[in-house]
Amino acid sequence: MARSVSRRSFIQSAGLATAVGTAAGVATAAHAAEPAGNVKIIGLACSPRKGKTTAQALGICLEAAKAVAADRIEVELIELAEMEIPGSPCAGIPLKEGQKDDFPELAAKLADSKVGGIIVGSPVYFGSMTYLCKALLDRCIALRMRQFALSGKVGGVVAVGGVRNGGQELTIQGIQAALLCQEMIVVGDGRPTGHWGATVWNNGKDDISQDEFGVVTLKNLGRRVAEVALGRGPKK
Ligand SMILES: Cc1cc2nc3c(=O)[nH]c(=O)nc-3n(C[C@H](O)[C@H](O)[C@H](O)COP(=O)(O)O)c2cc1C
Image 1: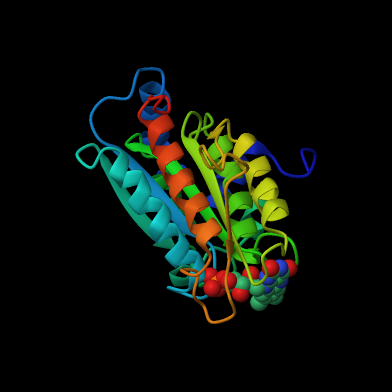
Image 2 (image 1 turned 45 degrees about the horizontal axis):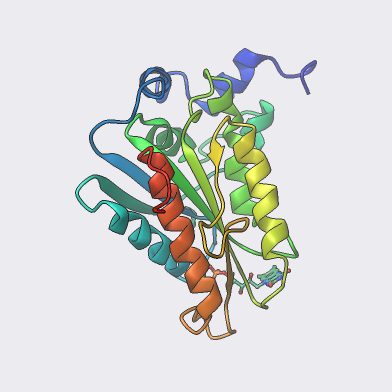
């Protein structure tokens, strides 16, 4: 990869030079200091189905994050189902003529210095993340090459499966690996559940509210991301 695709071609093909340049620089400087003022936490729903279980799960998670400090935390849910993010530009392949690409705008949003936490939510597809999630994470190589623009932001992961143990933890680990490569601060669901992240079960009726354990992990993950993003430890 390194031999055939230059650093410049990565950035050019990602179309990021202008969109993220300023935001990335600010983000790097901001992370050197203790966070002050408001902190934004973004939930990224990586299902092709808008408003379904992954989006619902992230809603619960973001609500718990906001509850940590309602006056300082702003939350936003972004659904990839509403966007076009082609994966191939990550490897320096130019967009086809007329092909839409929402990545530069999303990348600028994620790299903004106000963003203290990013919670990635994916349905489990055959024990792994969805194609939308993978395309986004692969495209984020452009942010890594722009001075690690996501460095220092807190990362949490939610996985929703159609069965209780359908590969949620595998899915979480795959996503966490990509976040670690961005120098993000990866956290799991906070205590008392305290494991890899939020593991959620869709009961086949596109309803996660019956999954008591999963909902608890969502709340604990949202709280943990917010606490770390604010520079706070857990309550004793
Ligand atoms: C192609 C495909 C593969 C799937 N593979 C799994 C799987 O391996 N394990 C699992 O628990 N659920 C699996 N599911 C079920 C989805 O993870 C589940 O329905 C999830 O709630 C969908 O998220 P959404 O409602 O946000 O779209 C699969 C669904 C699809 C469409």
